Amino acid sequence: MKKFLVLLCSLAMMLALVGCGGGEKKAETPKTDAPKVLRVGTEPTFAPFEFQKEGSSEFTGFDMDLIRAIGQQLNMKVEIQNLGFDGLIPAVNAGNIDLAISAMTITPDRQKVVEFSEPYYTSGLIIVVNKTDDSIKSIADLENKRIAVQIGTTGAAKAETVKGAKVTNFNTGSELFMELKNKGADAVIVDSPVAGYYLAQGGSETAKTVGDVMEAESYGMITKKGNTQLMDQVNKALNDLKKNGVYDKIYQQWFGETAKK
Ligand code: ARG
Image 1 (cartoon, rainbow, N blue to C red):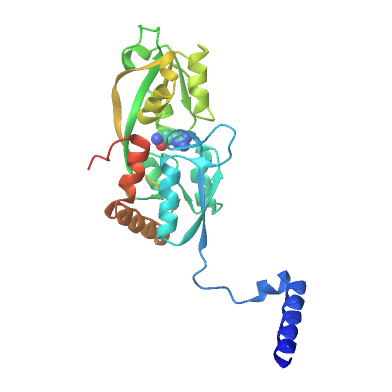
Image 2: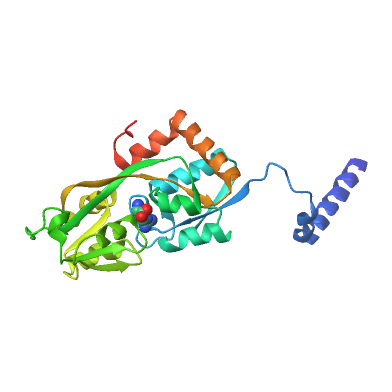
């Protein structure tokens, strides 16, 4: 009987606790091993690096898997935000996000204003034209032509060097191929793996790449200028993932081959 009473009492106490629950929980001292949030920005119209599958708001792609793996390595909770590509550098420097990963090429100009990670992917630029167009075989043939590019990208900078070209800057990567298909542009200058993915996903019915891959480019993640503390952690995590095989696994998943070393 006594036992039963004790049981009943503790049950009542538990119910009371549950009843007034919620609010008090927050007063508990925070666990020191609770993951910190890593606010990450990306421009997600750049498959296979960062994109949202049709009808889904989830971010997917090589960069997305990589940053989530880095977050896990650092015991940080990765929260991804959708931003314009040309807004990523201002956003890290304003402190609105901690880091950006967005297939961003490491360039001397950008290095002046942000911290870059070690290179995590080797890329380059390529020209995409309509399949039926035989007038364009290389960048020299783009003179006086209409070129579609994404705003603020290395592809946009490349297009600006073409004499007499009419360059149109689009906010998203997906618009480039649409513009080409609709004959609003004669060519697109974009990162070669992005062109390759587009063609493989059905784009090759109407489009093709021409010429060689131009420019040797490496992608890096960025943090605010001076935030070497976070960047050191990110670089260490990236190296760990390269050593323990996780990087290779993600690479293979998206590109079907292992990274050139
Ligand atoms: N690699 C190019 C650059 O850095 C294009 C990157 C575009 N990235 C994107 N997620 N839209 O300029």
